[in-house]
Every structure is written in C-alpha cells, then in structure tokens.
Image 1 (cartoon, rainbow, N blue to C red):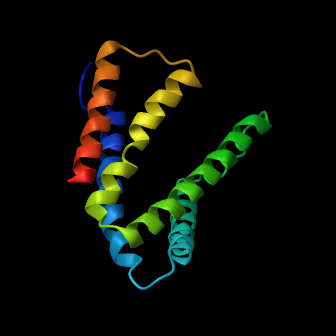
Image 2: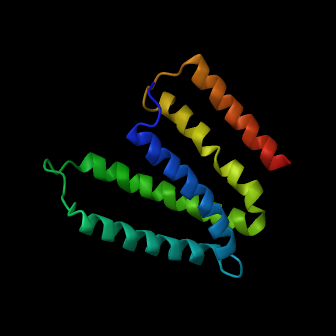
Image 3: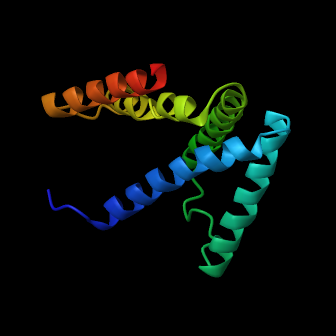
Amino acid sequence: MKFLQPWHWFALGSAFFAGLTAILGKLGVAGLNSNFATFIRTVVILVLTAAIVSFRAEWEWPRERALQPIVFLALSGVATGLSWLCYYRALQLAPASAVAPIDKLSVAFAMLLGVVVLGESVSLRMAFGGGLMVVGALLVAAG
C-alpha cells in the first residue's frame, strides 16, 4: 500500500484535531455544565461546516432524493451527539490524559462494527493491531 495517499492526510488531520479537541475541551468545560459546553461546540461546528459548504457551493440534495442516506446520517448525528455528551462529562470528571485513550477505543469499536455490520473483512494483522490498540489504550488510561 502506497503511504500518504489523500485519505491518509485527512485521517492524520482527524487524529491531530481529535487530540487537540481533548485538550481544548478539558479547558473549555472548566466551570461550565458539560451539556451546555457540548451545545456551544455543536453550534460552532454547524457554523463552520455551513461556511465550508457555502464557500465550496456544495448545497445540493441527492439527485435521487433517497431517504436512506439521510436517515443514516441523522442516526450518525445522534451517535455523535451522545458521544460528545459522554466525552465532555468524562473530561469534567477525569484528566484528559486518561479520558482520551479510552475515547480512542472508538477505533476498535469501528473495526468490530465494520466487520459485524458492514461485512468488511479482517486480516490477522488487522485483528492483532486492533487488539494492541485496545491493550495500549487501557494501559495508558490505567497508568
């Protein structure tokens, strides 16, 4: 596999910004209700993504007006919101250095759900790597 394909850059950006999110979120929930903090974050994301979609002129509804993708995106939004609410509450209760590794177990959950729900294949290397991620996250969080 050729490294540093376009998707790699986006994935690395996602990882970097997710790490930054933990630190900024920890600073942001100090003295605020975690649910209200999540609301503020959500409004900022709404404004930012609306600006990007507007700048790129990407306001277009699917041509076939299929409802299924919209339903799945809405459910994804519910899952994201619940994740953020739990994440910010955890940041209020524990150090970011303990919360972030446990939050990154989402990678292992995504791998497992990809196999179970989407029927994606899993190699021995992928399973071993996923297992190492779980062990690593738990070791870091317990330390």
